[in-house]
Amino acid sequence: MIAPSRGGYEGRMALCYQNQTSNSLPALRLHLDPNMNPNLSLEVISVEDETGKPLAWSHQPLRFGNLHSDKGLLDIKLAKALAPFRATTVSMRFSSSDKNIGSRMVMLQDDPYQSLDGWYPKAMTARGSGWSLDDDRPAAGASGLIALFVLWLQQRLNAARKERDELRQRVTALRSLGEERARLVAPATQAYSRLIQKEHLELMRLRGEVGLLRSRVKQQASQAATNAAQNTTSDVAPDAGRRRQTRVPVTVRL
Image (tube, rainbow, N blue to C red):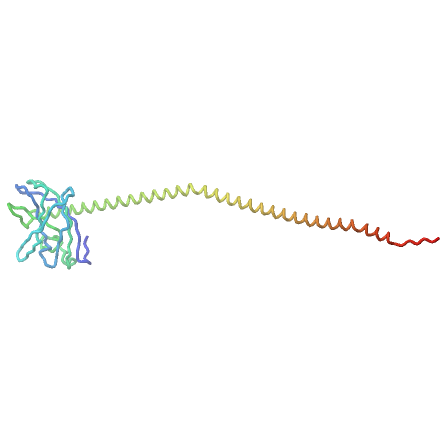
């Protein structure tokens, strides 16, 4: 991950190293070019073998012409000595804090060391009992690194695509569940709506009947009161007439 705005970058590299000597190699060495410049730095975070187990590593001093750094070399102790003409793969994480990374890292070539070709730990060549800064396989090494980087990017891309497909499947499954739920709930909702409507109509009908019954009871009560009043009047009037007739004096003349 390159971040020119912060003046630095982080990287992960898988190095496939082949021993092209007739001697077994107990360790590998890489040179850290940015550490040769006081304005640059290349820090190693971790080193692992091809099985993912951590490997012991340390910095070693390096002098190249007028340039010198106590962290110019990276010495990696292998879990098992690398036999002649056999290959092994080591993975490492590293970071850099180049203050001028945007303008310095623009060229792809072996030199100068602060170019784009020198931003990662570079393998050294075993020669006899020592190590050489010159890699006898610059094209193969660069091509191998680019191929590994492209492979790593492809793996990340495949992982992202797989995650995207899984998310799409989850979304599709959730959408299907939502549609199935809606399909199952719709009849119940419709039945409930019909039941509510039916009960509402029944309630209105009962209210109408109650109002009608109340009106009839009221009319009947009023009619009964009227009839009672008429009956009372009919019963009192004849008695009063008879009483008036008995009170009229009768005079008899002889």
